[in-house]
Length: 84
Image (cartoon, rainbow, N blue to C red; front, side, top):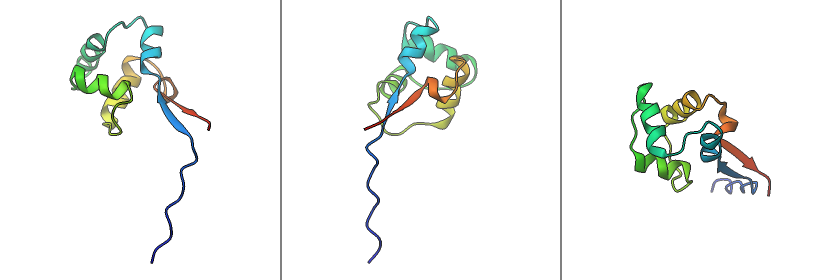
């Protein structure tokens, strides 16, 4: 029998994309998708909306890199880590 699984620390990742969008005067997910497409990152409005609203656990690293590029931010402009 193997080791029991580790317990999670209680920390939670929180998406900050909408906050960063507002700081950059990007008003819609559609506009954000257009900017991503402009740098060669393909995604749909619905897929990106689910991602930035935290309704999916899966994400494409290319989209995260694209978000950092078009929003001109580091990873902490996209995600934050909350304490329990």
